[in-house]
Image 1 (cartoon, helix red, strand yellow):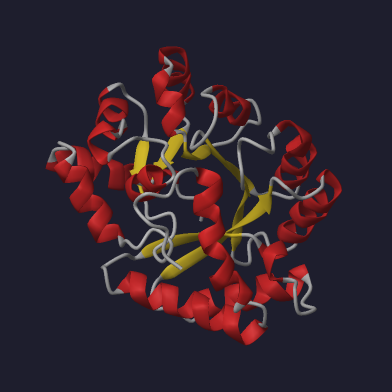
Image 2 (cartoon, rainbow, N blue to C red; image 1 turned 135 degrees about the vertical axis):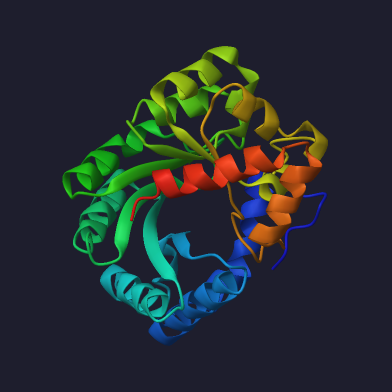
Amino acid sequence: MVAPPDCPSQAAYITYFNDAIAVLQTESALERAALELGIDSAAENIDYLEVRWAPRLHLGRGLTVAQVIRAVLAGLAAAPLQAMAIVCAMRQDSTEDNIDLAREAGMFAGRGVVGFDLAGDEVQYPIAPHRPAFEAARAAGLHLTCHAGEAGDPSHVEDALDLGVERIAHGVIGAREPRIVERLRSEGVVLDLCPTANWKCKAVPDLTKHPLPQLIRAGVRCTINTDSRTVAATTLTREFDLAAAMGLTDDEIRRCNQTAYESKFG
């Protein structure tokens, strides 16, 4: 359930979610996992949490998408902090399935679901076919974010920007292109960076090469996140410690946290 340090790629990293997903196929399991995530997060003095997960990965034992969403929202509502949900579509799913997912997620807008996302293998599955799902999510009143820039070409980050997203999960590889960095800065799009996961996916060769410090100093709005506490084997506290080890000052880390509050969807 934990991706190793020598994980060769994003595609390999993603496979380490499979065992957890396999046991999260009932309403009770989903509700309990969401609650325990909230409890663990509150123990780190986190007072606001946004949880990204893909409901269509939890239909293996007959649940509907609506049942999956309701179960997760019930667990988050019982947690000792404010917690909201971002529904992820998966790149490998059909455009039609993801449009339907966006519309179902929109039925929970204002009731715990605050955003719509796209995740999965960037190299094999491009963003473009899923534009209609993002349009459906926007029409349903959801905020937009997208996983991009953790594998493949820097242009994947531009593809996400072209969807009109407010935030991008990762965007690390886009930092290689000054043109993309300037577009992120000028458009004010937030990068939700996850140092440990970025390294394990090999978006960066090692943590000393992570672009977080350079991005912040270039004026890009950034936040610090865990990606997955289990698969990445980390906590937000550890990610903040890693940011400090990368050379971020206390003021820069505070600025990342302030950006998180300013750009939250809930």
